[in-house]
Length: 105
Image 1: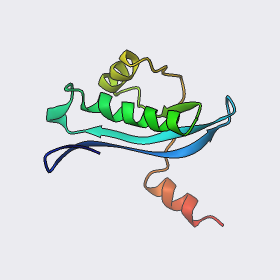
Image 2 (image 1 turned 120 degrees about the vertical axis):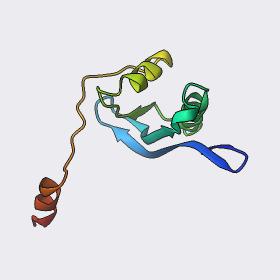
Image 3 (image 1 turned 180 degrees about the vertical axis):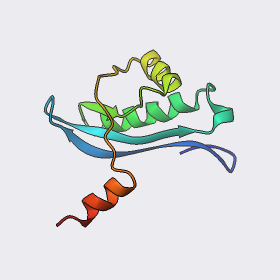
């Protein structure tokens, strides 16, 4: 959590995981969010640095996360930090498809 006084500026959430491609233990970052007025001020960089420190502390191989191709600002930010952006797609079950899959036994 990134805070200024009692105000929350942003957060990063993550879970431990296993990367079957390399194969190794990792942290999977579920979300990195910074309030719009605070973007570009180092908050996201500080949050991602904290996640990376946690991965190093746990002796994990990597941190991975998803980013939509349409989110060009986030993609540029991650690349500036040295992240590689692969060609993976984000899959989603939404609305009727979600309901249909949930109903299957």
